[in-house]
Image (cartoon, rainbow over all chains, first blue to last red):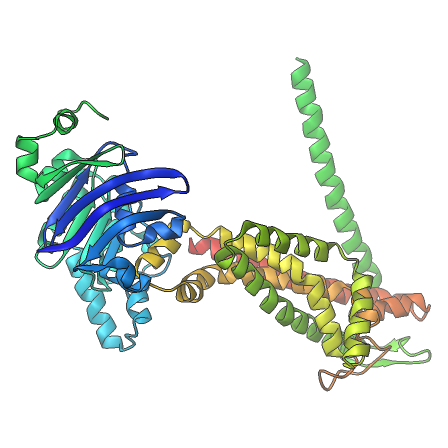
Length: 247
Length: 278
């Protein structure tokens, strides 16, 4: 089933067009990688999906259907709750770990301490951070390492129970071990969540994703099953990129 | 070689300037301390002005309390307005033109001489709104005086909050109001309080705005917001201006300076707390 259907999406800032007529369907409970050289509009695409683009002064035309309903017909806050995002640079709130994870649930009206505790436990476990942190949840999140901070941000995105998780190069600032942690975690997630991940790292896309989309200069060049695409690219440009001709 | 000489001349010039400033500050404090110290005793701090002419003996207690109350009212009045304006300009104002107009108005306000503010407070608050010469009139007038100071600094503090944190909050589907009250303001809390405390010290030291709006010579400790008050700077002005007692003037000045130092010290501590946190 397609959880997201995107038709003729064009995105720009003022007169500057970033994405041109992009159409793509995202399958539910699958991991979709978006690959492409820097500046091809991957991140812009991601931020459009949960309307974060509007906070940065961008605008879009075309249609994005979430569960067959136009995302503009949802309240902006609701769509962001359903489609969570984790940014490239880990940005935990400068509060305690506990407060980072209860920030959004409290906003959605959960006041009961037990319920909040269980959300914290659950999301920390999902993000593989439980064993490292459960002894001192009042520790400032700023004291965590970069990889831990990123996993905390993923846990934080999960606290509102989204259906889709968007990740914008979540591992670009992390070492191999932390990257492996996050990849393993994402593979576990795909049972419950739909994941769209922007990545620079082709082998990462190959390792974890079911589908891969290749973008170049704001256009979607090729989209298909990951294996098929890496073994047998249809477009010449995809082949060249995979072989390492573009940056 | 000549570059080297220029460099050392410049260095000497900078060091000398700092030194001169340091000497001036130490001299002022030392001078006031030396002249005022003898007047300081418990009766001076906790007593009412006495003697003939009034003020030549006794203490400055009503003026201390008056000054503190004026400061509190000014801070409350100014910070509510200033923080709101700052939040508006940073988070809600999407039109650059409006933002520029707001900034222009605030700059103009900051440039208004304090005695003119006093006159304004006198006509509007004391006469037209019939608040009388009172704690409230004086507090509001002082509040208007420190408003631009607080607004400019709070706006800067808010703008310095890491954008990615704010975005992360919006990305969770959390509203702007919640983000501001639960994330941004708590983060900036100690910086904002530190700013308000400093501004309060500034308000406390000002005499001109309260001469026409709040101060009545040797008024007792005010009973309500509508009572007139005595304040330390005005007390000092009367003691010296009317030639009542120079010695007591120095004592008053010393108390004023010590209170201001304490306020600045608190403000500094709050600022340091913030840095530790990060």
